[in-house]
Image 1 (cartoon, rainbow, N blue to C red):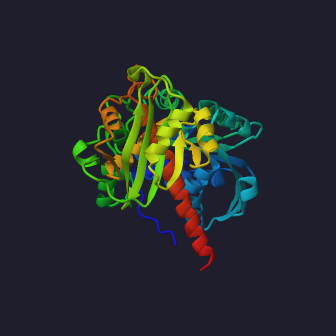
Image 2: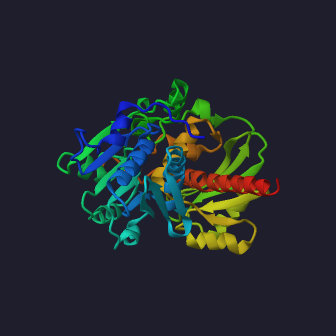
Image 3: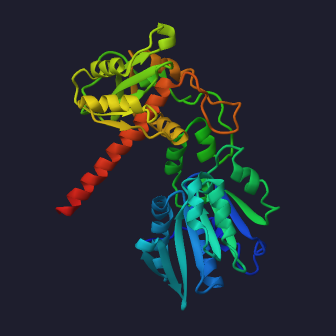
Length: 421
């Protein structure tokens, strides 16, 4: 059963700003940003439903996340648990991606939308809404957000936004947060101290999970630019293995393909919850003066595997010819890598900070790139410099693809076990 902890003053404001007598009741929107685990999502979602049920009957609303799956997981599940404790009646219609909520003789409908990419704006066109809640709005494309806001044409409609910070040139920061007064929006900045259910121990744990720009954004809640080394937490003393690495229970090979640019491959093994980069292959055709064919690279791949039971070869998704080459030989399962740069960098950072990635001393090119891999400070977006990045790209491919596959396998195994209980 859900038990509510006391709400902080900022959380209460996020819930009640629209109420009669509030100094903010005339505002058209609320924007909440700040640290992770600061309680902004729960307080905003409770406030959103309370406002809509108090002010409307028989109206339509939208709750949006980057994907429908993420908005269900991160917002809808805890929200419905909380609403049931408070006496609301909720009926979720999964096939229609909507929820009917009833309270005090009133019923309203809440549609779920995902704002994954530019094409998502078409999904929300045509509907008339009395209000909208956009969870993690900074992860959505501007076209989707602007289309969603344009759908709110009912009288007394309002906008509810929340997000964790991104870079200071992000369109939502420049167009909404910095112009909050101009847009008649209430802006609230949250810290982890606003979540009174977090113990000091848990706060310290989150503080230790991040470093560099991600610490400033997710822990301090700042809209700051990425600059300097991308992996400043990497330490030769902590992350480099000397001598023979331990025996491993599962193996992968990751590959960043290059013909003129360097070709980088790494052999990974899992042991005791830690992933070891056991050895590497790195060919720089410019320095060597020799271009290699896909077949020659396949021979290098087979030699790198060394007869080990490699679960999959993860390849740069743009390397279509090499993917076909590997598949044609029929020895290794070959899968295109997940290529989400910023999310991948963040996950690599998390694993380095928790000491779950280690590198054998023989992986000299990968170790070299750690000291050179930097943010591009000439850009107004979070992008790395396109140099000294081939082993780093391949590392990111491994983390984003192999670890996701492992998580899905574990989830499937748990589901199968549950079926036979």
